[in-house]
Length: 275
Ligand code: G3H
Ligand code: ZN
Image (cartoon, rainbow, N blue to C red; front, side, top):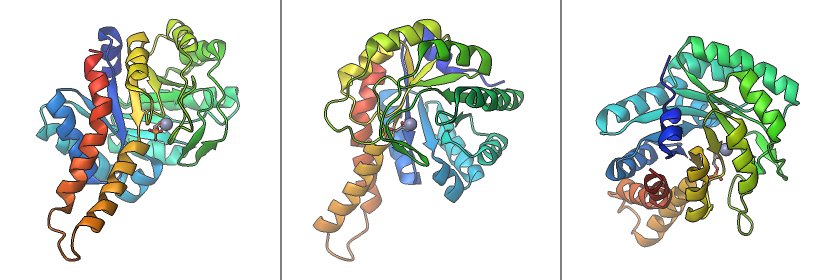
């Protein structure tokens, strides 16, 4: 069984940055930044990334980066609603996977997550589960509104399902926030008290640094960031084409990597500071 590396983070009160990636240059940029700051890193494939890159390729790339950099780099499947794909990713050697049953009724989410956790644990893979609804859009999982994680249900879900990490809805949302994000720290405090496993904060993009630090100090052990990375990548590509002559494309990958590095640093600074 793979060690639950987030438990170490929980005991030592720090968090791991967990970033959505779609390209190898994003992966390298994130590894470079994390290595410079001396912190471990999780690279996440969405369902569509796992499908187009291929789950085996994704695992191999992350393993190669883990070998190449002096930090721990883990592979994770994010927000998976397709059980067949999730099983393929487990068999391909992902370090952890997330089954997102948050849109299903509680009993069904619990039942599927429990059976997946047995499968994961037999193969040494860690499982993330979720309860409550996070507003916004992440692959096939979308909602206009949040439904905060209920502490009674959360306690039961974590105890019965056997999940290794648990994603909570406490005011966080996917995508760019409309207005200032408002995390409900009193709810987080109760969830940390009642759920013994490491908690995960999704929707990292746009959460102020002080709120991320506060959430980590209270017990968040994994912070997911996607939109900001994608946006930095695409904006850099756009501005490159605006500032370079047609045909002058020699250093575009360096340019993209620099943009992703800068975008991720703002978040990584919080994880390092919380150690
Ligand atoms: O699971 C992925 C994250 O929750 C990403 O959220 O795109 O709002 O940063 P974000
Ligand atoms: Zn998410």
